[in-house]
Amino acid sequence: EVQLVESGGGLVQPGGSLRLSCTASGFSFSSYWMSWARQAPGKGLEWVANIKQDGSEKNYVDSVKGRFTISRDNAKNSLYLQMNSLRVEDTAVYYCVKETVVVAGLDYWGQGTLVTVSS
Amino acid sequence: AIQMTQSPSSLSASVGQRVTITCRASQGIRNDLGWFQQKPGKAPKFLIYAASSLQSGVPSRFSGSGSGTDFTLTISSLQPEDFATYYCLQDYNYPRTFGQGTKVEI
Image (cartoon, rainbow over all chains, first blue to last red; front, top):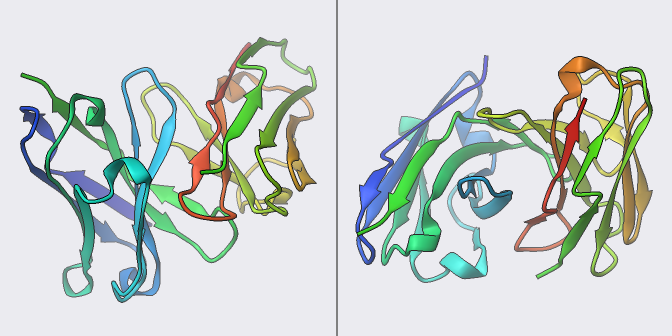
């Protein structure tokens, strides 16, 4: 059974930093692209970033470029999102997402971790 | 970034009714589109890929169609468990973008 468990969320002041982690199990983690997506309270979904199997390619939504960094450790079956210079508008539930080979194939999602940016 | 616009934003329907949700892209995206279902307090569930292919385990009452800029998600006979918000997602280029969502109320 595929499982994705996020951790690291919490309350942080504007301008602060936070590192999210996602531990994966139930599939060959090193064989798949992985993504982060987010959802602000009461709002819709937003794709944030993804990373290739070996970490050689990364893509970001414009609003986080230069502030967020996605990374992975295949030996630890783990995905990370380093978030710097956090803004109030980054407040959201952050989801770790497994990708599959089909188009728009975000096939497994974690339960999410809440990040609140507030003074 | 490609803008995805869903309509309607919300709808009310009865059990057994046929429901159609539309998603329009701001430019042509071939068939690089997926659909997701999200229930309150839960993570999204992957329903359809490549505009019209049903993900394994998804009931056959769900179907998708379209290509280019206009796409539809159809629920042929609405069931009580289909109460949820539905999102389209374009995977034509980065950044991937979701529609704003369509809330289906029973």
